[in-house]
Length: 438
Image 1 (spheres, helix red, strand yellow):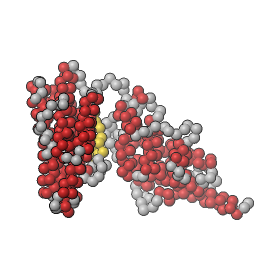
Image 2 (cartoon, one colour):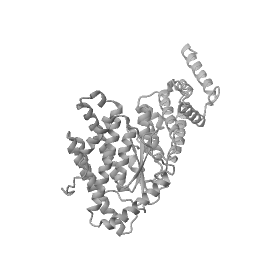
Image 3 (cartoon, one colour):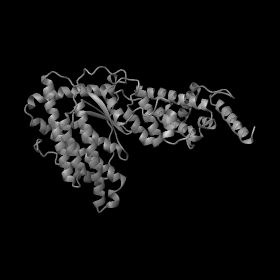
């Protein structure tokens, strides 16, 4: 036997013996896919608990073991099977704990690298693959489509091998990424199950009215113009018109539904926020939700809002709040650039106070705009009890999902930021009553 072959065999022997310390076979015995899956999950748990803090995932004993045997085709096949088994076991539990595909993606893009994000997207696709579309909730179908979570890989070879080749990763590098991705899934907390799991969705007999596509098109057009203009007053007036259009549509719809004895059951959605100032941004979403007959709650540890309301109102909240966040951030930055007290105007305390004040003032003006819309409706005396009944249904759904919900305040530490934020919100002209048909 040549010297290189002896060294290679000795290295494989050391790797096998080291793997035995972590439950991956012993000596020359070939570890099973189940043993490897268990070892991968154990490594992910250790990583999630901080056991590998300060060390690269590539130094994990499981990764070292597999990397040392990378030339063993039989072992690689067992690794591929173990990766699939471990990932599907963990992601199934995560979905049962209330997480949706888009939630996993949002959490992943904030906490792991692009390789891990792509792996988790494929794990989601593999989970959803066996389920017929008719047995899947609409939200699941939409999110899978938006994430492009499809089975791009061939059935002729295991996914792990094809995914690693796609990203030009060695077996050891790929396995280190898998452990990093699964460690993230391990730390995801239990959430409220706001949509039925695939395979359990009932036939769509319940009524869920989304906003008419023509109305949505007009609203999106107004908001796109608001986000593209360099004039704050024009942007805020366009946003106001978008809110008025959505309010008018919603009020007309609830009267029609009341006449037809149709009940639109409340649903729920999650809106993820980017740092910084997530609590101030959450306040802005909250006031938009209230103005559109919804309830909202903020998960500060992860940075997302859960909104409860009927589907059309949820559409309005998602569209308007997303656009207002863009506009509020731009107004905040512009204010700091032109303010003579630039050092203070660019500070974190100023900017957070700006956004909180902006949200508070926008909320006041949205409430006034909604009250005006009700007063100007064709039958305000009939509309009020219908809206009250609608609010009771939303409150009941919210309390069922979040029985322990509590209000929490936000501290303001910059008077100048507060004043600037309210001034920016005052330019919104939300009380302007323009014709919605123009």
